[in-house]
Amino acid sequence: MKMVKETRKIWNDKDVRVTATCIRVPTMRAHAESVNLQFEKPLDEDTAREILRAAPGVTISDDRAANRFPTPLEVSDKDDVSVGRIRQDLSQDDNRGLELFVCGDQIRKGAALNAVQIAEMLLK
Image (cartoon, rainbow, N blue to C red; front, side, top):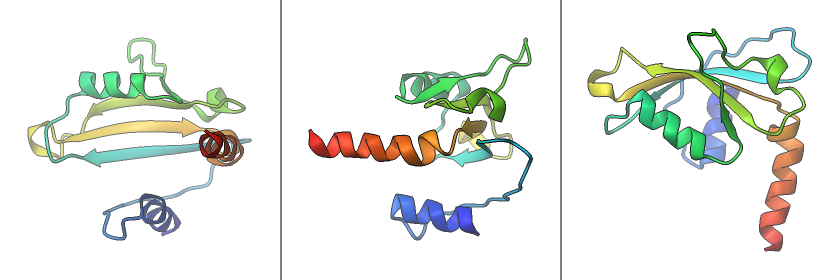
């Protein structure tokens, strides 16, 4: 329930629907999430990649041919969040859903770096 509560708190939306299963795996330092997204309008994989590629603090690691996807090891001690395994969610009609896998260093992006970035924005 922590992930559900945190998402609602961060987005300031008590009605947002979140389903989450959290597990602990032996990694030194990183969070990884399998995410299913549902949209009001269709969104294809290529458009999602373009949007994510343009987002600050996001890198795409999504090479199916080479079997390269985000891993906790790769993102440890890095500022960017890595996104991969971007594909249509076949349980949603009309291309209104996507599945993706996200990894990020929770110390860098989840705590320390975010605090610095917020402070920089406040000083502008």
